Image (cartoon, rainbow, N blue to C red; front, side):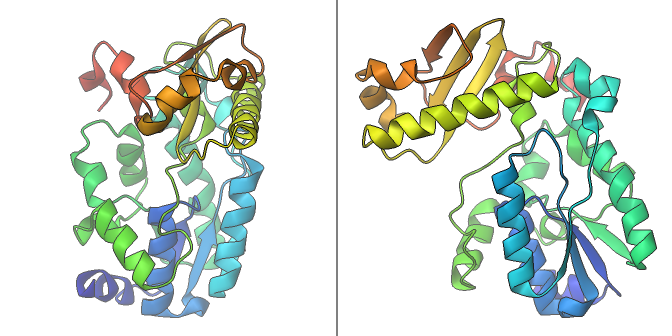
Length: 272
């Protein structure tokens, strides 16, 4: 942790690209410890791909730390490469984000922009968004300090951060199978489907942590939940029947897997 705080304290000021997730929340808290709240600001993108609840939580966290919080709009859907939804979709998403954050940092007189990329992300092998952020000049203090996700969660818990055990919450576009165009109605459909499923699970007394409704194209969806809950959900037909917007809903017997859509890419190497 000393390496991280030392690196952050060497910066004149910092704008954190703040999604509200475990990593960027920890980075924001660490930056406040190293620099003080007056030299740190946070920015959370407002986008059709981000549920409003995530924005509300991010704002509350940032305000709790005493830092200025920005909520600039991004327009990923205006980028053809993002809408096309090939394996490099995240490259166009992060490019759009940085095209908004760079001018914001300049207007605010902030010296650097940082993302919450951690050491695990660098060895995951398929992260086109990291490449886009690096190309745009963003720094990655967590990865540079060789901090893994488990370490970040552990220290977040020590620091009393409410995000220490927050489940992964990738953007809604990650629910749409590669090759299917990303549209605003499509993003709204998966958001509504997940909300309906969570409600049905609560009513059934099934405590889910990780949940995804994956749009496989047409009217077919695949549901991923915590692997230990698959059997219970499979036995309750009314739970899956609650999923809105899809004529056919399948339950993935392997359970939730972060980045499972990447398994469908024929040649992910080309997008690195």
